[in-house]
Image 1 (tube, rainbow, N blue to C red):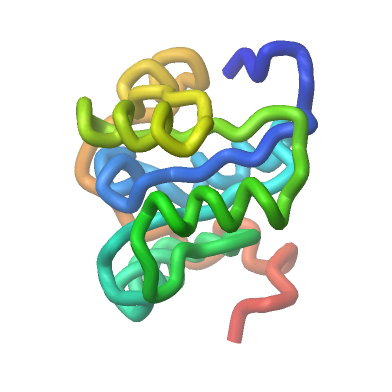
Image 2: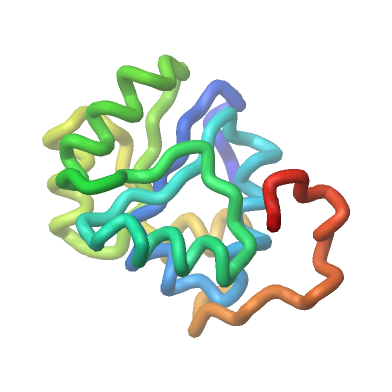
Length: 138
């Protein structure tokens, strides 16, 4: 995926956009190559995001917690002062949210096409899919 020439970027996925990707764990691994920080935002309860990310072996640098997506994105932008803040979403509401909080918006379909990520029902990662690199996994 073209990151605009800078890896000084914070990338946030809306949970629903992440659920549109067949291999969300691979997406996060790939995104870490050209992003400084990668995480998930959602208005769902924290345990919903945590369950999804654990099931798919995703280590996030930030998550939304018990607050609105707008507040989460604003907090992330303040906490992670990167050159760019990009929000990957799936609909017009996500695009409006990104504009409202001053983030760049990227539809998940465009991100998937640019980065060669597969769209589809999320699949659990294989047991040996890079587990040795995870020092935070129980």
